Length: 197
Image 1 (tube, rainbow, N blue to C red):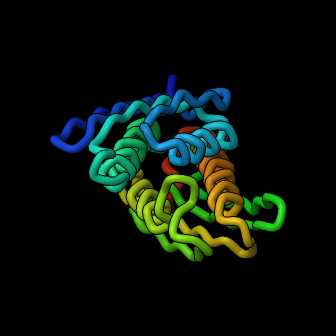
Image 2 (tube, rainbow, N blue to C red; image 1 turned 45 degrees about the vertical axis):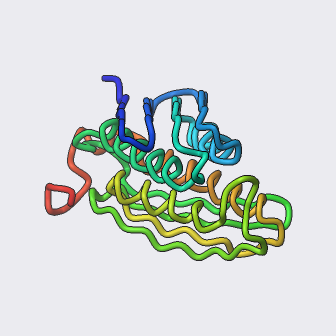
């Protein structure tokens, strides 16, 4: 059974369309008008071995905030749609990923409860064409709308691009591990409560 989620969001500020295939091959087709956001979402797809299509247009003449936020919303909801009832999944995953001098750690729980704790500092005001705080806002929104617990931290690093990129790679790896179907579960809900959330 295909585990593919989709979501479309139309507002006066943005138009966003997402498809997320949990059992893909790492292909990304991403176009948001924000180069660094495209690069970050592509990292999640490639290292999570997901197929993600994300098309967005927004009021970038104001700034990048609305587009980044709505992409986080749409991606999170597409992920939740792809997971469905989450029966048989591993549920939890973690990854420790280096990139040159940078090191990021991500642990997450596909628990149907959205929550994010992030620990990262930026040396500059922007990473690529994105304010650093919007990278954090994107991750918080993704976790909230995707209904998963996320704990992400950058343990070392000097270059802001490296810090952001290894964090997204770690997120992809952790999501891949957590969303994988474990045949030993035989379709069971991965909780002693027999329900997530």
